[in-house]
Image 1 (cartoon, helix red, strand yellow):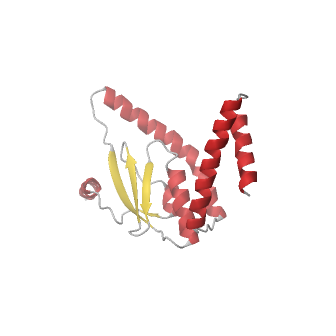
Image 2 (image 1 turned 180 degrees about the vertical axis):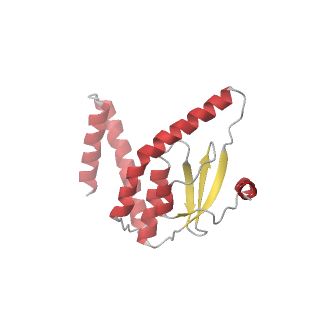
Image 3 (image 1 turned 60 degrees about the vertical axis):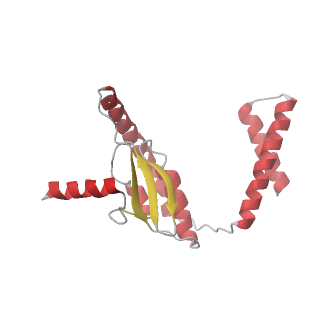
Length: 176
């Protein structure tokens, strides 16, 4: 298995780099062998199983909209910054249904991190499975994407960030 993976990855590397020089082939084979060796070690130590559901995989259809809206948000922030208004640049925390051993929740955690970080205004820094929280960064505050909520984000719970708490109090005051 290792040898076939090495050959496949090396062939793809050669295809993408377009190089025909021997020293680059040797360097590429060495780096790929090191990477695959590390991957095998981690795979053996972490016996994670995944339970991919079609509805979770198909949540990806929302990402083009998130990319477009994120680009608009970033552009607005850029224009404000050029006009002298500083960007918010905030870290936020929200609840996230997860567990270390549940294959379905492990899969959803991985998908939420990957899918959500595609948008330029929403970078997931990590999901803490012990405290069931997701930490993310935004340049401008916006709502948690519906796709992320579908994969396990629980908005309105575990809002431990003082900036978020202040923003929530302000929103409640505006609603009254």
